[in-house]
Image 1 (spheres, rainbow, N blue to C red):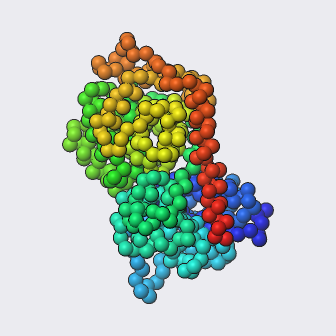
Image 2 (cartoon, one colour):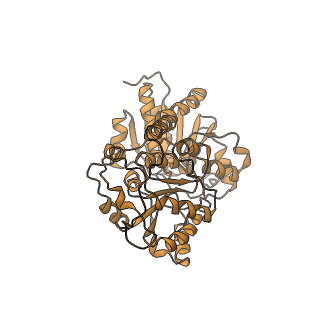
Amino acid sequence: MPNTDAPHILQLFSSDSGFAFQDMLALTRHCRRQDRPTLVVGPLNRVQQEQVALAGARWVNLALPACPEPRRPALFAKPPEPVVQLRRLMADFEADLVHCHGVPALSIAAQALPPRAPLVASLGDLSGRQPTRALRQLLRRPQALVVTAESERAALQGIDPRFDGSACLIYSAADPRGISSDFDLGRKRRSLGVRSETAVIGALSPAVRGLGLETVIEAAATITRDFPNVEFLFVGDGADQERLAMKAHELGISGATVFRGDRVDIPEIIASLNVLVIPRETPGAIAHALQALTLQIPVVSVRTPALCDVLEPVDPQAFVPCDDAVALARALAVRLEILPPPNQEGYAEYGLNLNLRDMLVSTAGFDLDQVGLEAQWRGDESQMQQAITKAQARYSSRAMADAIEEIYQSLV
């Protein structure tokens, strides 16, 4: 049973805040280990409700408005219904601290809490937001402000440079997940709208301006000219998705680019790729990189401290400069011509049984078995596994929860 004398933590999350739910779930499990009562509030679907219950916490399904841009409430205006409901929940639960995940959740909590009540905000949805006065005032409300990736820290500095030194950078939990035993590469690719016989390059990122997806599309124009059996898969919602699709159309590669919104089957999607591209370190990018390395999927990435920790011990040549389409195309071409090491045991551990030679890309046409391109090892297997294990420990859900725990202790 939870310790009723321990601080009561209310976790509030919004549906459009990326990795918020998985991070919140990891924190809920951490609070259970601490015998700390926890209440999870947000737009929970049935599966999420079951996960929260299994984590040993209470939950309340509360729909939160998306509020694309925070606005200052009108004077003497009636509070929105979610604000009224949150106040009641806080009183009934006797919350000592509220932890918000995402800007919409923070907007509701800031209206529901007394001015000096302990409030923590973990933000992974700042990219693409306009630096309005209302947003700057909202971000001043939490006693502790957490950003979950380098792109979010850059977005925060763009909103107001004074926030850069006060925000903590705590990465979203990066725990590679297993692949179901009945995973079928061809079936998964068809469900995503890409052909099973092509090589697929994937970018998993919000479709927001400034996150490097324009550069990926420019590199795609070069790659598809030199490698006719390659397709590009973009996974992630965002305000700029239509504009990015139009850019692909203008470059004449709309037939080789597929845009998908947010997905929950990210491990299976990564397992379906030939190369993973990380044009910016967005929330979840560390998890994507680790998932790809675990499955022996080559990664091409921008250079950030965290991504260097994960990728450099395994593939020192994995990095390209930001917004350099020529360098990105060159790096992709190299990885399309060289197969990853045939570590069938590593795939089998995650439920995969793939013939890696079928993933070969030919520069001469659609012949996937062209003579002269042989599988090459990308490094010592034991050293690679040690590097992956070390990175998993450093960016795991336990490491994330321990860092948040220090913030809880300082406020409660």
